[in-house]
Image (cartoon, rainbow, N blue to C red; front, side, top):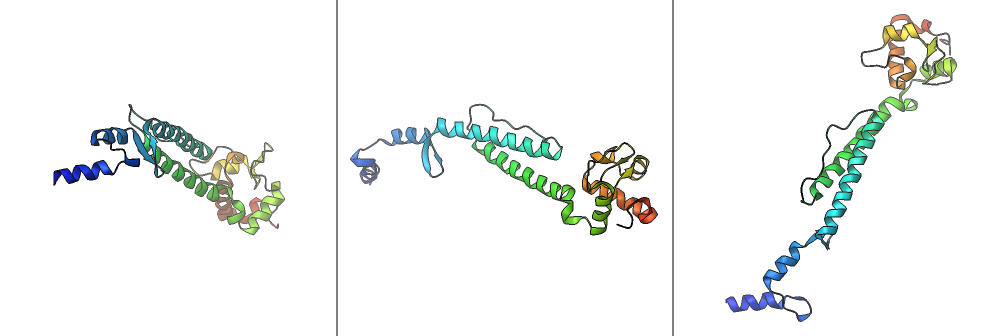
Length: 189
């Protein structure tokens, strides 16, 4: 029974060459399965290390675009191959990108959520310039500096022209709730 097993293993070699089981184990330990084909471990690990560097950069990029910092900096340790770390960072980078796109849509895609009355007021006041700063009036809705300071929410920028369109709209709504449209020269727009 043992002899048949040895023949079967020896017969499974390529092109009629019979490799010893110890040689096969050594060969398979020097290669890794990458994308369905065997690649030398050194090359597989170097591409995994490149992937780690790339995805670390992508995590930082999406965090910085949103104005935040990445929470942690993961790096490969020792001599182990960082394939798992590359997958984790790939998933983190994808999550950061999705979070940024949600944030961007909520704060900056004003054309999707700004009511037409407020668009007309912003167009009349400043030409829908969210970064408008004339010194006395700021932002797309032409906030007086004192109005912005009185109605801005905690965590909002100290100047209206530095705020996102969503933040400016929310402050404009707070003013409107208290005074109606009388706070704007273009109230009839």
